[in-house]
Image 1 (spheres, rainbow, N blue to C red):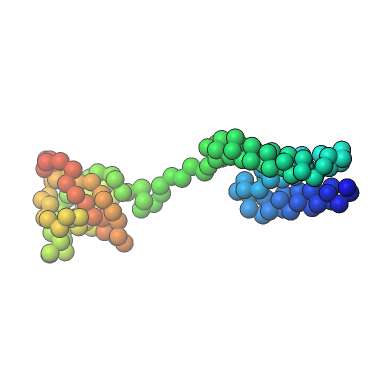
Image 2: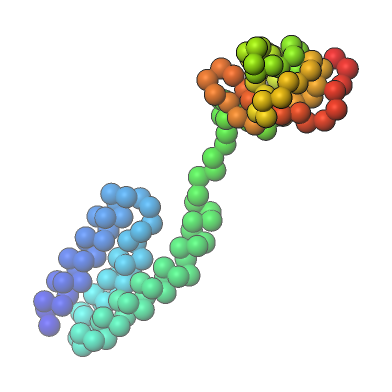
Length: 149
């Protein structure tokens, strides 16, 4: 029965090496199952019991702990640079006309070249919302009625 112990020890090392290489909590559950099966093998448990313990512990830990671990260890992504501009509101400072390729908006303290998302002209003084950014141009749509600048 010594070969069973060596088998579980080899699998334990392989699963831990895979976990160390990925750091994605993919195989740590199976390493725990191998550890329990290894202990059972050292105490002389039959192979069917070792396999049952391996599967039960691995699947049990995977089902119970993975959702919890993913919830608390998921990196929080924050929008930066240009992505942070999408969804913000500003004012049209120069009438937006896609046909004439003109238009400018002020978002915060920064002026941006602007185009209308719908293709319709947007008069100066209109409050707009940024829908997307392409290069150095923002594509906007009217957020509400024209306001005084």
